[in-house]
Length: 365
Length: 89
Image 1 (cartoon, each protein chain N blue to C red):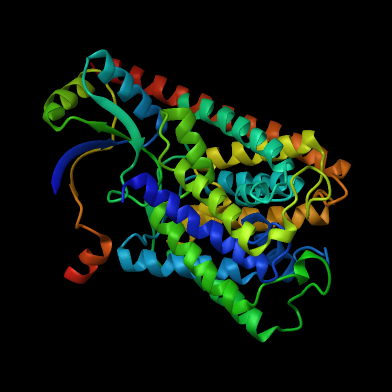
Image 2: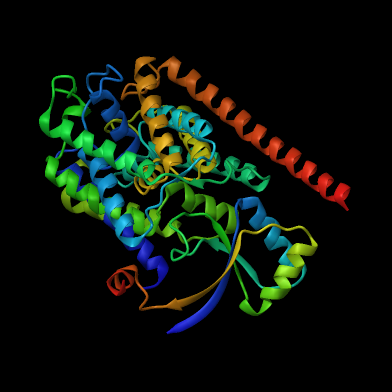
Protein backbone atom coordinates (compact mmCIF):
# COMPACT_ATOMS: atom_id res chain seq x y z
CA UNK A 1 0.00 0.00 0.00
CA UNK A 2 1.50 3.34 -0.95
CA UNK A 3 1.82 6.09 1.62
CA UNK A 4 -1.11 8.17 0.34
CA UNK A 5 -3.51 5.22 0.46
CA UNK A 6 -2.23 4.43 3.94
CA UNK A 7 -2.90 7.99 5.12
CA UNK A 8 -6.36 7.89 3.53
CA UNK A 9 -7.19 4.65 5.36
CA UNK A 10 -5.89 5.94 8.70
CA UNK A 11 -8.08 9.02 8.21
CA UNK A 12 -10.92 6.64 7.33
CA UNK A 13 -10.62 4.90 10.71
CA UNK A 14 -11.11 8.27 12.43
CA UNK A 15 -14.04 9.22 10.19
CA UNK A 16 -15.81 5.89 10.71
CA UNK A 17 -15.34 6.12 14.48
CA UNK A 18 -16.95 9.57 14.40
CA UNK A 19 -19.97 8.31 12.44
CA UNK A 20 -20.40 5.29 14.75
CA UNK A 21 -20.18 7.41 17.91
CA UNK A 22 -22.82 9.80 16.56
CA UNK A 23 -25.07 6.83 15.73
CA UNK A 24 -24.74 5.51 19.28
CA UNK A 25 -25.59 8.71 21.11
CA UNK A 26 -22.97 11.48 20.78
CA UNK A 27 -24.42 14.93 19.98
CA UNK A 28 -25.11 15.91 16.35
CA UNK A 29 -21.99 16.09 14.18
CA UNK A 30 -19.96 15.56 17.34
CA UNK A 31 -18.92 11.95 17.02
CA UNK A 32 -15.44 13.29 17.64
CA UNK A 33 -14.49 16.84 18.58
CA UNK A 34 -11.33 17.46 20.53
CA UNK A 35 -12.15 21.05 21.52
CA UNK A 36 -15.71 20.19 22.57
CA UNK A 37 -14.57 17.13 24.50
CA UNK A 38 -11.86 18.96 26.46
CA UNK A 39 -14.46 21.68 27.10
CA UNK A 40 -16.89 19.07 28.46
CA UNK A 41 -14.13 17.71 30.69
CA UNK A 42 -13.36 21.25 31.94
CA UNK A 43 -17.06 21.51 32.81
CA UNK A 44 -17.16 18.13 34.55
CA UNK A 45 -14.20 19.22 36.70
CA UNK A 46 -16.18 22.31 37.70
CA UNK A 47 -13.89 24.77 35.91
CA UNK A 48 -16.91 26.34 34.21
CA UNK A 49 -20.57 26.40 35.14
CA UNK A 50 -22.26 25.84 31.77
CA UNK A 51 -24.56 23.05 32.96
CA UNK A 52 -25.27 21.72 29.45
CA UNK A 53 -21.64 20.90 28.57
CA UNK A 54 -20.25 18.90 31.49
CA UNK A 55 -19.14 15.32 30.93
CA UNK A 56 -15.90 13.36 31.18
CA UNK A 57 -15.69 12.29 27.55
CA UNK A 58 -14.30 8.73 27.41
CA UNK A 59 -13.10 9.32 23.82
CA UNK A 60 -10.36 11.63 25.13
CA UNK A 61 -9.27 9.03 27.71
CA UNK A 62 -9.25 6.43 24.93
CA UNK A 63 -7.16 8.62 22.62
CA UNK A 64 -4.61 9.27 25.38
CA UNK A 65 -4.36 5.58 26.34
CA UNK A 66 -4.26 4.37 22.72
CA UNK A 67 -1.50 6.82 21.84
CA UNK A 68 0.42 6.14 25.03
CA UNK A 69 0.44 2.35 24.63
CA UNK A 70 1.28 2.31 20.91
CA UNK A 71 4.02 4.92 21.31
CA UNK A 72 5.47 3.03 24.27
CA UNK A 73 5.47 -0.19 22.28
CA UNK A 74 7.07 1.35 19.20
CA UNK A 75 9.66 3.44 21.02
CA UNK A 76 8.13 6.76 19.98
CA UNK A 77 7.35 7.61 23.60
CA UNK A 78 9.90 10.21 24.73
CA UNK A 79 9.67 12.65 27.61
CA UNK A 80 10.64 15.95 26.00
CA UNK A 81 9.80 19.60 26.58
CA UNK A 82 11.04 23.07 27.38
CA UNK A 83 10.18 24.78 24.10
CA UNK A 84 8.44 28.04 25.09
CA UNK A 85 5.82 26.44 27.38
CA UNK A 86 4.11 29.69 28.42
CA UNK A 87 3.68 30.86 24.82
CA UNK A 88 2.22 27.45 23.97
CA UNK A 89 -0.21 27.77 26.87
CA UNK A 90 -1.41 31.15 25.55
CA UNK A 91 -1.71 29.83 21.98
CA UNK A 92 -3.71 26.84 23.25
CA UNK A 93 -5.92 29.22 25.25
CA UNK A 94 -6.78 31.42 22.26
CA UNK A 95 -7.10 28.40 19.96
CA UNK A 96 -9.90 27.17 22.22
CA UNK A 97 -11.64 30.58 22.20
CA UNK A 98 -11.64 30.52 18.37
CA UNK A 99 -12.90 26.93 18.32
CA UNK A 100 -15.76 27.63 20.74
CA UNK A 101 -16.86 30.66 18.73
CA UNK A 102 -17.10 28.47 15.61
CA UNK A 103 -18.32 25.54 17.75
CA UNK A 104 -15.82 22.85 16.97
CA UNK A 105 -12.18 22.01 16.47
CA UNK A 106 -10.84 21.44 12.92
CA UNK A 107 -11.78 17.76 13.22
CA UNK A 108 -15.41 18.64 13.97
CA UNK A 109 -15.29 21.14 11.10
CA UNK A 110 -14.54 18.23 8.73
CA UNK A 111 -17.20 16.08 10.41
CA UNK A 112 -19.78 18.89 10.17
CA UNK A 113 -18.94 19.30 6.50
CA UNK A 114 -19.35 15.56 5.90
CA UNK A 115 -22.91 15.81 7.24
CA UNK A 116 -23.85 18.70 4.98
CA UNK A 117 -23.30 21.65 7.36
CA UNK A 118 -22.13 24.31 4.90
CA UNK A 119 -21.17 26.73 7.70
CA UNK A 120 -18.15 24.45 8.05
CA UNK A 121 -17.17 25.40 4.50
CA UNK A 122 -16.99 29.08 5.55
CA UNK A 123 -14.98 27.97 8.59
CA UNK A 124 -12.65 25.92 6.38
CA UNK A 125 -11.90 29.03 4.32
CA UNK A 126 -11.07 30.83 7.59
CA UNK A 127 -8.92 27.91 8.77
CA UNK A 128 -6.92 27.89 5.53
CA UNK A 129 -6.54 31.69 5.72
CA UNK A 130 -5.25 31.43 9.32
CA UNK A 131 -2.78 28.72 8.31
CA UNK A 132 -1.65 30.80 5.33
CA UNK A 133 -0.85 33.74 7.62
CA UNK A 134 0.94 31.43 10.07
CA UNK A 135 3.04 29.96 7.23
CA UNK A 136 4.28 33.47 6.37
CA UNK A 137 5.73 33.67 9.89
CA UNK A 138 7.32 30.22 9.52
CA UNK A 139 8.97 31.39 6.29
CA UNK A 140 10.42 34.39 8.10
CA UNK A 141 12.03 32.26 10.78
CA UNK A 142 9.30 31.82 13.44
CA UNK A 143 10.19 29.07 15.91
CA UNK A 144 9.30 28.20 19.49
CA UNK A 145 12.80 26.79 19.98
CA UNK A 146 14.25 23.36 20.57
CA UNK A 147 12.84 20.94 23.08
CA UNK A 148 14.97 18.88 25.46
CA UNK A 149 14.91 15.49 27.06
CA UNK A 150 13.14 15.54 30.41
CA UNK A 151 12.75 13.17 33.35
CA UNK A 152 10.71 10.17 32.24
CA UNK A 153 7.98 10.85 34.81
CA UNK A 154 7.18 14.14 33.04
CA UNK A 155 6.05 12.16 30.00
CA UNK A 156 3.72 10.01 32.11
CA UNK A 157 1.81 12.97 33.57
CA UNK A 158 -0.79 13.30 30.81
CA UNK A 159 -1.55 9.53 30.73
CA UNK A 160 -1.84 9.66 34.55
CA UNK A 161 -4.27 12.60 34.21
CA UNK A 162 -6.32 10.45 31.80
CA UNK A 163 -6.29 7.61 34.32
CA UNK A 164 -7.58 9.95 37.05
CA UNK A 165 -10.33 11.12 34.66
CA UNK A 166 -11.28 7.47 34.03
CA UNK A 167 -11.56 6.87 37.79
CA UNK A 168 -13.77 9.97 38.14
CA UNK A 169 -15.91 8.76 35.24
CA UNK A 170 -16.44 5.32 36.80
CA UNK A 171 -16.73 6.33 40.48
CA UNK A 172 -18.72 9.54 39.75
CA UNK A 173 -17.79 11.41 42.95
CA UNK A 174 -20.15 14.23 43.97
CA UNK A 175 -17.67 16.98 42.98
CA UNK A 176 -17.64 15.85 39.34
CA UNK A 177 -20.47 17.43 37.36
CA UNK A 178 -22.46 15.57 34.72
CA UNK A 179 -24.95 17.38 32.46
CA UNK A 180 -28.53 16.15 32.72
CA UNK A 181 -29.64 18.01 29.59
CA UNK A 182 -28.06 19.50 26.45
CA UNK A 183 -25.04 18.21 24.47
CA UNK A 184 -23.20 17.17 27.65
CA UNK A 185 -25.93 14.65 28.44
CA UNK A 186 -25.76 13.06 24.99
CA UNK A 187 -23.17 10.33 24.82
CA UNK A 188 -22.38 6.97 23.29
CA UNK A 189 -21.91 4.07 25.77
CA UNK A 190 -18.72 4.52 27.81
CA UNK A 191 -17.06 1.28 26.69
CA UNK A 192 -17.70 2.00 22.99
CA UNK A 193 -16.35 5.56 23.38
CA UNK A 194 -13.27 4.31 25.19
CA UNK A 195 -12.50 1.58 22.66
CA UNK A 196 -13.09 3.75 19.58
CA UNK A 197 -11.10 6.55 21.23
CA UNK A 198 -8.18 4.16 21.67
CA UNK A 199 -8.44 3.00 18.04
CA UNK A 200 -8.46 6.63 16.90
CA UNK A 201 -5.46 7.37 19.15
CA UNK A 202 -3.50 4.51 17.60
CA UNK A 203 -4.42 5.63 14.06
CA UNK A 204 -3.40 9.20 14.87
CA UNK A 205 -0.13 8.24 16.50
CA UNK A 206 0.93 5.92 13.69
CA UNK A 207 -0.13 8.25 10.88
CA UNK A 208 0.81 11.60 12.51
CA UNK A 209 -2.36 13.03 10.90
CA UNK A 210 -2.79 16.71 11.69
CA UNK A 211 -5.46 18.86 10.09
CA UNK A 212 -3.23 21.94 10.28
CA UNK A 213 -0.11 20.05 9.11
CA UNK A 214 -1.90 18.78 6.00
CA UNK A 215 -2.91 22.25 4.87
CA UNK A 216 0.38 23.83 6.00
CA UNK A 217 2.42 21.38 3.89
CA UNK A 218 0.26 22.06 0.84
CA UNK A 219 0.89 25.80 1.18
CA UNK A 220 4.51 25.62 2.27
CA UNK A 221 6.08 22.74 0.36
CA UNK A 222 3.28 21.62 -2.00
CA UNK A 223 3.25 18.18 -0.36
CA UNK A 224 -0.09 16.38 -0.02
CA UNK A 225 0.97 13.45 2.22
CA UNK A 226 -1.00 14.57 5.31
CA UNK A 227 -3.83 16.06 3.25
CA UNK A 228 -4.79 12.52 2.22
CA UNK A 229 -5.47 11.76 5.88
CA UNK A 230 -7.87 14.70 6.09
CA UNK A 231 -9.62 13.54 2.91
CA UNK A 232 -9.91 10.07 4.47
CA UNK A 233 -11.64 11.53 7.55
CA UNK A 234 -14.09 13.43 5.33
CA UNK A 235 -14.83 10.53 2.97
CA UNK A 236 -15.38 7.92 5.66
CA UNK A 237 -17.46 10.19 7.92
CA UNK A 238 -19.63 10.82 4.87
CA UNK A 239 -19.93 7.11 4.04
CA UNK A 240 -20.50 6.26 7.71
CA UNK A 241 -23.24 8.90 7.97
CA UNK A 242 -24.93 7.71 4.77
CA UNK A 243 -25.15 4.22 6.24
CA UNK A 244 -25.67 4.92 9.95
CA UNK A 245 -27.11 8.44 10.26
CA UNK A 246 -28.94 8.91 6.97
CA UNK A 247 -31.93 10.67 8.55
CA UNK A 248 -29.68 13.29 10.13
CA UNK A 249 -27.92 14.43 6.94
CA UNK A 250 -28.93 18.03 6.29
CA UNK A 251 -27.29 19.95 3.46
CA UNK A 252 -27.44 23.72 4.02
CA UNK A 253 -26.64 26.50 6.47
CA UNK A 254 -29.64 26.68 8.80
CA UNK A 255 -30.86 24.33 11.54
CA UNK A 256 -27.54 22.56 11.88
CA UNK A 257 -26.87 20.74 15.17
CA UNK A 258 -24.71 22.82 17.53
CA UNK A 259 -23.76 25.38 14.91
CA UNK A 260 -24.74 28.93 13.96
CA UNK A 261 -24.85 30.90 10.71
CA UNK A 262 -22.68 33.91 11.61
CA UNK A 263 -20.45 33.75 8.50
CA UNK A 264 -17.96 36.36 9.64
CA UNK A 265 -17.28 34.75 13.01
CA UNK A 266 -17.31 31.20 11.66
CA UNK A 267 -14.54 32.45 9.37
CA UNK A 268 -12.63 34.50 11.96
CA UNK A 269 -13.02 31.92 14.75
CA UNK A 270 -11.43 29.21 12.64
CA UNK A 271 -8.84 31.66 11.25
CA UNK A 272 -7.70 32.12 14.85
CA UNK A 273 -7.64 28.32 15.28
CA UNK A 274 -5.60 27.90 12.07
CA UNK A 275 -3.13 30.59 13.05
CA UNK A 276 -2.61 29.18 16.55
CA UNK A 277 -2.35 25.61 15.21
CA UNK A 278 0.41 26.46 12.75
CA UNK A 279 2.32 28.46 15.36
CA UNK A 280 2.00 25.51 17.78
CA UNK A 281 2.98 22.97 15.11
CA UNK A 282 -0.31 21.07 15.32
CA UNK A 283 -4.08 21.25 15.71
CA UNK A 284 -5.85 20.24 18.97
CA UNK A 285 -6.05 16.56 18.02
CA UNK A 286 -2.34 16.45 17.22
CA UNK A 287 -1.51 18.28 20.47
CA UNK A 288 -3.52 15.69 22.41
CA UNK A 289 -1.64 12.87 20.69
CA UNK A 290 1.78 14.46 21.24
CA UNK A 291 0.91 15.12 24.89
CA UNK A 292 0.13 11.42 25.30
CA UNK A 293 3.47 10.28 23.88
CA UNK A 294 5.62 12.26 26.29
CA UNK A 295 5.68 15.75 24.74
CA UNK A 296 5.22 17.96 27.81
CA UNK A 297 5.01 21.13 25.68
CA UNK A 298 1.92 19.64 24.04
CA UNK A 299 0.76 18.79 27.58
CA UNK A 300 0.96 22.48 28.49
CA UNK A 301 -0.93 23.30 25.28
CA UNK A 302 -3.71 20.91 26.31
CA UNK A 303 -3.92 22.64 29.71
CA UNK A 304 -4.18 25.91 27.74
CA UNK A 305 -7.10 24.38 25.81
CA UNK A 306 -8.84 23.33 29.05
CA UNK A 307 -8.38 26.72 30.73
CA UNK A 308 -9.38 28.49 27.49
CA UNK A 309 -12.61 26.46 27.50
CA UNK A 310 -13.27 27.35 31.12
CA UNK A 311 -12.83 31.08 30.43
CA UNK A 312 -14.88 30.84 27.23
CA UNK A 313 -17.91 29.73 29.24
CA UNK A 314 -17.25 31.75 32.41
CA UNK A 315 -16.87 35.01 30.43
CA UNK A 316 -19.72 34.26 28.05
CA UNK A 317 -17.48 34.01 24.97
CA UNK A 318 -18.62 30.64 23.61
CA UNK A 319 -21.19 30.60 20.82
CA UNK A 320 -24.36 28.52 20.80
CA UNK A 321 -26.93 27.51 18.22
CA UNK A 322 -28.41 30.99 18.49
CA UNK A 323 -25.20 32.78 17.50
CA UNK A 324 -22.00 34.38 18.78
CA UNK A 325 -22.26 36.64 21.86
CA UNK A 326 -20.64 40.09 21.65
CA UNK A 327 -18.02 39.05 24.22
CA UNK A 328 -17.05 36.15 21.99
CA UNK A 329 -16.60 38.41 18.97
CA UNK A 330 -14.39 40.79 20.94
CA UNK A 331 -12.36 37.87 22.33
CA UNK A 332 -11.70 36.47 18.84
CA UNK A 333 -10.51 39.87 17.59
CA UNK A 334 -8.28 40.34 20.65
CA UNK A 335 -6.98 36.78 20.15
CA UNK A 336 -6.05 37.39 16.50
CA UNK A 337 -4.25 40.65 17.28
CA UNK A 338 -2.47 39.23 20.34
CA UNK A 339 -1.32 36.05 18.58
CA UNK A 340 -0.06 38.09 15.61
CA UNK A 341 1.95 40.27 18.04
CA UNK A 342 3.47 37.14 19.62
CA UNK A 343 4.42 35.69 16.22
CA UNK A 344 5.80 39.00 14.97
CA UNK A 345 7.90 39.48 18.13
CA UNK A 346 9.38 36.00 17.82
CA UNK A 347 10.34 36.61 14.18
CA UNK A 348 11.90 39.98 15.09
CA UNK A 349 13.80 38.33 17.95
CA UNK A 350 15.12 35.59 15.66
CA UNK A 351 16.34 38.21 13.17
CA UNK A 352 18.18 40.08 15.92
CA UNK A 353 19.76 36.87 17.13
CA UNK A 354 21.01 35.82 13.70
CA UNK A 355 22.31 39.36 13.03
CA UNK A 356 24.24 39.25 16.31
CA UNK A 357 25.57 35.79 15.48
CA UNK A 358 26.90 36.81 12.07
CA UNK A 359 28.47 39.93 13.62
CA UNK A 360 30.11 37.71 16.21
CA UNK A 361 31.50 35.46 13.48
CA UNK A 362 33.01 38.35 11.50
CA UNK A 363 34.47 39.89 14.68
CA UNK A 364 36.17 36.59 15.46
CA UNK A 365 37.60 36.44 11.97
CA UNK B 1 13.24 -4.37 -1.78
CA UNK B 2 15.98 -2.19 -0.39
CA UNK B 3 16.10 1.27 -1.96
CA UNK B 4 18.44 3.82 -0.44
CA UNK B 5 17.60 7.46 -0.15
CA UNK B 6 18.84 10.41 1.86
CA UNK B 7 17.09 13.10 3.88
CA UNK B 8 18.26 16.14 5.75
CA UNK B 9 16.41 17.38 8.85
CA UNK B 10 16.19 20.90 10.27
CA UNK B 11 15.35 22.70 13.49
CA UNK B 12 13.13 25.32 11.87
CA UNK B 13 11.04 25.47 8.73
CA UNK B 14 12.93 28.55 7.57
CA UNK B 15 16.23 26.63 7.63
CA UNK B 16 14.71 24.04 5.29
CA UNK B 17 13.60 26.78 2.89
CA UNK B 18 17.05 28.41 2.83
CA UNK B 19 18.62 24.98 2.30
CA UNK B 20 16.26 24.18 -0.60
CA UNK B 21 16.95 27.50 -2.31
CA UNK B 22 20.71 27.13 -1.96
CA UNK B 23 20.78 23.60 -3.37
CA UNK B 24 18.53 24.62 -6.28
CA UNK B 25 20.89 27.50 -7.08
CA UNK B 26 23.73 25.00 -7.21
CA UNK B 27 21.64 22.68 -9.41
CA UNK B 28 21.51 19.82 -6.92
CA UNK B 29 18.49 17.54 -6.45
CA UNK B 30 16.35 18.65 -3.51
CA UNK B 31 12.70 18.27 -2.55
CA UNK B 32 11.08 19.29 0.70
CA UNK B 33 8.84 16.66 2.31
CA UNK B 34 7.36 15.71 5.70
CA UNK B 35 9.95 14.05 7.97
CA UNK B 36 9.86 10.29 7.15
CA UNK B 37 7.88 8.26 9.71
CA UNK B 38 10.85 5.99 10.47
CA UNK B 39 12.95 9.00 11.56
CA UNK B 40 10.49 10.76 13.76
CA UNK B 41 7.00 10.77 15.18
CA UNK B 42 6.93 14.54 14.66
CA UNK B 43 5.44 16.09 11.55
CA UNK B 44 8.10 18.66 10.65
CA UNK B 45 9.75 19.41 7.33
CA UNK B 46 12.76 17.56 5.89
CA UNK B 47 14.58 17.67 2.55
CA UNK B 48 14.98 14.72 0.19
CA UNK B 49 18.42 14.80 -1.45
CA UNK B 50 20.61 12.60 -3.64
CA UNK B 51 22.92 10.42 -1.48
CA UNK B 52 25.85 10.91 -3.86
CA UNK B 53 25.76 14.66 -3.20
CA UNK B 54 26.42 14.20 0.53
CA UNK B 55 29.93 15.66 0.68
CA UNK B 56 29.11 18.48 -1.77
CA UNK B 57 26.04 19.45 0.30
CA UNK B 58 28.05 19.45 3.51
CA UNK B 59 30.77 21.67 2.10
CA UNK B 60 28.27 24.01 0.39
CA UNK B 61 26.40 24.46 3.66
CA UNK B 62 29.49 25.11 5.74
CA UNK B 63 30.81 27.63 3.16
CA UNK B 64 27.57 29.59 3.16
CA UNK B 65 26.70 29.25 6.86
CA UNK B 66 23.56 27.23 6.13
CA UNK B 67 22.37 25.32 9.15
CA UNK B 68 20.81 21.86 9.08
CA UNK B 69 20.24 19.40 11.87
CA UNK B 70 21.25 15.96 10.59
CA UNK B 71 21.94 14.01 7.39
CA UNK B 72 20.29 10.59 7.22
CA UNK B 73 20.80 7.68 4.86
CA UNK B 74 17.64 5.57 4.85
CA UNK B 75 16.62 2.37 3.21
CA UNK B 76 13.09 1.79 2.04
CA UNK B 77 12.85 -1.73 3.35
CA UNK B 78 9.26 -2.78 2.81
CA UNK B 79 9.41 -5.55 5.37
CA UNK B 80 10.76 -3.20 7.98
CA UNK B 81 7.69 -2.48 10.10
CA UNK B 82 7.72 -1.35 13.72
CA UNK B 83 5.91 -4.55 14.66
CA UNK B 84 8.57 -6.84 13.17
CA UNK B 85 11.29 -4.70 14.72
CA UNK B 86 9.58 -5.11 18.06
CA UNK B 87 9.47 -8.89 17.64
CA UNK B 88 13.16 -8.97 16.69
CA UNK B 89 14.15 -7.16 19.92
